[in-house]
Image (cartoon, rainbow, N blue to C red; front, side):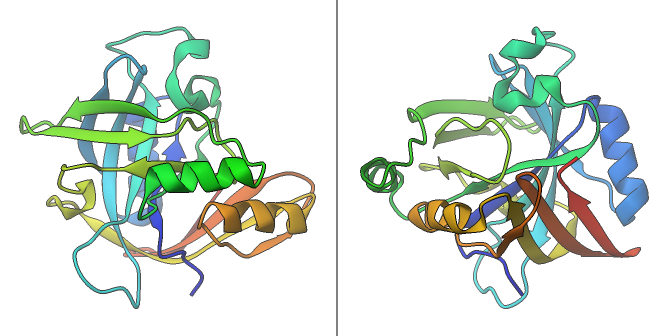
Length: 215
């Protein structure tokens, strides 16, 4: 099993949210539950919990199906995380949850890895709960963004359907450089050589093993 302990969630980005949720349900046999809209970011999501073999304690890992929010109707360039430019379902990026977000940002900068400015954001769940978190920007690819859920209950602890995450890996043109970058962020992954930066996740689902990969 190769799943970093700091993994918070994977982002399965889709060009149309309803179509993307239906497609993932067809692949896995499990339908993601509506999460909510991200005000000002132009996105909305549906969620599945990810069970990770060998972990203990409360669930704190999930799969986010994310797409442009038709109710916000922002131009593609203004949709958060680069999701406005997604043309096919793709394992777009991932988020890690360091023990100390601010310290990790400082240590990354000292090592020459600029993760961007930390910002606070929030959304309301369908049942009216307010979720608040801090995060660094993310634009897609194998470099994760960092997240801190502050005083908010973790989304994976809600009553969500679940699948099992068996493996998470990456490829990159320069595996050594990618491995160093991930280590700085406290997000170690196996990285193999490939023509471009890409992620690959292996899920165990009611319909067998399903591979999600960068498009």
